[in-house]
Length: 394
Image (tube, rainbow, N blue to C red; front, side, top):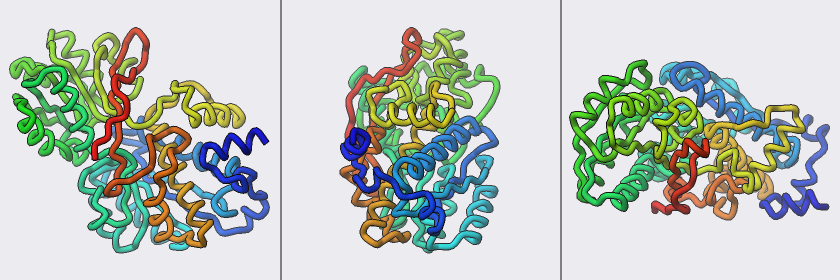
């Protein structure tokens, strides 16, 4: 009874909490979720951590929550190498192979891939999300089946710029970003907003998504002498290099980043140079033990014989996505609408659910979740500490 009561309080129905017999689940057609992830390439660290989050989430749905309306949730994983052509080929393989009444969600790996697939996804009526938080994708009029499970990159920039304004009203800002769709996405907005807020963008630096020597970047930053530097379009591929080089060269600017820079690996790799690095982040950290989902997944992994040490933010983000998708699927199944259109309908109605504390809520606004917090790196504590409560960006 304690177990049922716990799950009921977290938003899981009593019958679902009891689970369905495994034999019945095995006999029913599966419900399939495909994840196209960068398991190789410059962002493989994030992709493999994300895959682990999907695996745990799907296993939890099947073994603890009883699947989806008596059907087993099945995960399909394809490697994209963070390459649009390879990702597109993987998508085409999956959708041509799987039945439309079974494949009810696809999750992609990047802004570039998502933009390339968006017209076809809309044509197929296929529910979709991605690692991307691109502003263009959060447009239900154009892409009615695409969901952004967090704030857009524009939203993240807005949160950072508001914080800069609090610290120094007429600040000088530098923007350092990768020459990818991921990197470029929020830059026009950031420049426009900075100007509107009375700030000056004194330097822009465009780089590859990964490199081994940050000295030229930091030399250019020293010449521009900004008060704040915002890094965008990396997933720990270069941020530690830039921070260490900046410290070595005596650059006094405060560094900031968005969601994909918000992992403890940044502190571990950059060392003392990470002190004060400020990020936007909208999920729980693995060390947030008061969050029900963290406590639940620690116990679940322990029962499965899996490592319970720190799980990266990319794991937490994937876990938050798969639990929300499965919840929408369960609600659609309960209404007799476990179809692609039914999943979209119930994702749009998911505002009373928070993924066991992994999100503020799943109340979508223009198919995005416009909520984040700001965190600041503490080398002494070995973690990112929250410096704001939830910031609502819409």
